[in-house]
Length: 372
Image (tube, rainbow, N blue to C red; front, side, top):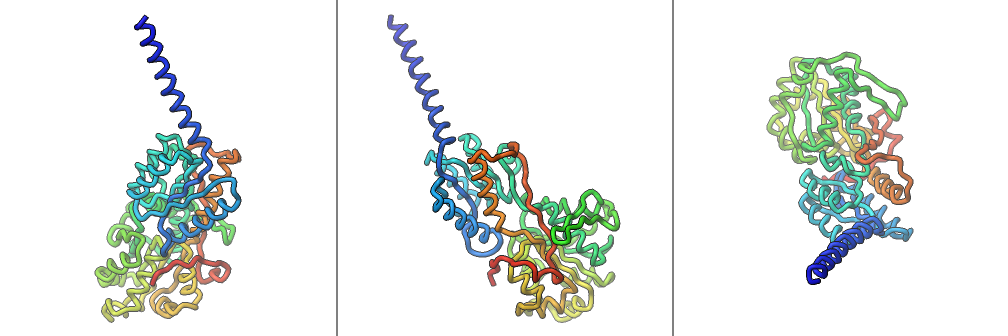
């Protein structure tokens, strides 16, 4: 009899455990809060994305169907801690996850374990990306392809000198570099939303030629104007000497902020006059990616830095890559929760990008975000 009672008690405990787990999963699925992780709004592209996220969260809260909470952070580790708070709250309908660093991977893995749906935005972390209900960003491959196309149109050929200013070692910049190289190899075409035309390389490069172009002068700037400034302060004399033979220099900057770093260096006194004179005498072309109004003002001639740009650069551009897309991505989570969803788990959605230069800059409004 005691044995029967013991077995019965064990069965009750097991059933209670399963019931508890089921209730937890149901609570997660039936939650009414959309959590949004991202940067602390201050300046730059990521900060502006955070500002748009805050505004969208306010709109959702006013509508009243869901509660929206924006959780700013300054590091990937802090985002991991935020996920633990989200899970503990037990009210998550879904999470829009803008990972600041790859160290935020543990946070996404925790969401997967807790069965909380999430959209990965901008920095796509490999591993968790296979479990995201969507991986959303601007089309970074097309950013790279567009810059390769533009530089090639400005005369870039094998044997020329190029400087590569990299944001960081995450997927954003690695995909931009992949697109850049794929275009030159003839494997990827560049589609321009402004002209509604598709472009392909006018000369197929070998990988050896691309490697030589990218080998000597490249640096990770951590998305910082200071990072570009510091590197070029030390290297510009060597770079100009290398480029002098061909009379051309190409600067592949992967972000507006880093392009501002180059401008700030050239308008100051950190570079010797002989190097500046050589730079002014050669053809110099510089890219950017983002869409800061401050850089648009340089291109259009409205900015106080425009004379410096006109003196040292023969032309410049910035690939349109607006932080406003953060608003769209939060909207995707609303679509998912409403059942308006055709994407497969792990699928990617990439917003179109295009070249903005002096010829069309007047047609676009940029975002304000540069810190002097």
